[in-house]
Image (cartoon, rainbow, N blue to C red):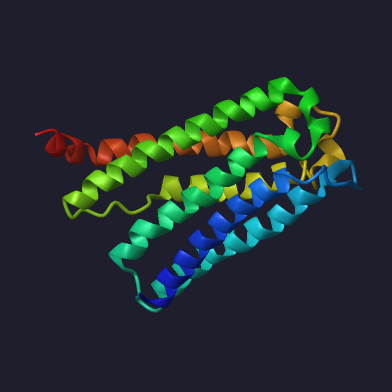
Length: 215
């Protein structure tokens, strides 16, 4: 296994460690909330934002090393999108249960409903694309990420830290806006849109895989 693939596998291990930590922290009484500007940021959210950024950085690092050193492999093409989905989907689900860490955010059920719809759409898309990849693997076909899928991942990696940090730093000027219209949420909406667009493109471009599988 080359270096880029080792970094990808390390990211997957880190993601599972984060998921375990979420369950452990859920058993601990509510952490204190710190005010930064116009945002009230929960300490747990702040910790996971840092871990998320580190994990996201390894995503850029392994891809850069693979391309620069000509170490691009089919295993890397297969594992890298899976690692991205595990990271982003785990954190999006974490965002949907703020009552576990920040009960003061429960007063906006509309916002949570909108976020829930976005998360369900993105995870459903990921499951469909992953199913397509698994079918393709059986036929020795590797489906690499397209530009729209990469754009979706980048938008998610921008939106997730901002949502974890309660819209900081944009809260300095949009704190009085309706929560659904705050800038951090717009990044999340764009990620959802790009997720659906990329999913449709994946299915259309690789529709022959489904046709051959059904034979």
